[in-house]
Length: 123
Image (tube, rainbow, N blue to C red; front, top):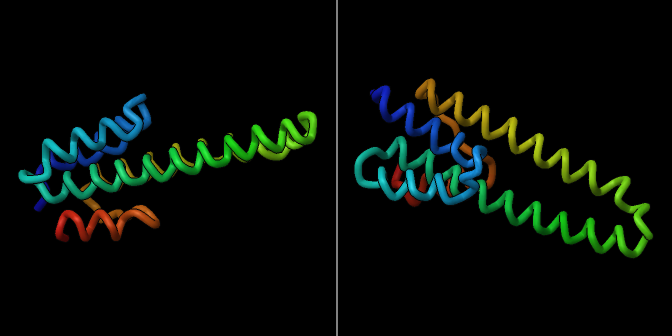
């Protein structure tokens, strides 16, 4: 059974990333709990890996946006700026969903990074 404190820190590992903690806050939570709670460590590591993935996506899409915007004299921005906004909204929704699942003590695994986190934590 997962304790209330573990569920709280599992949730915070996700939400702190949204509140300006980017990948640093989940990493700090992971390092603090990696030997104390597999539940918290799993959620924090997932959040950390997901934030790194999102950083790569945003940097990549932002770079493409800048190049296309330059080459098309700004016309390419009509497509790429909404795409960047959509990525941000999708991240907000997905991280919020993960935080709710963690707070409820329910299993949750991010697509692409969940299995890696599970293997590292040993679940």
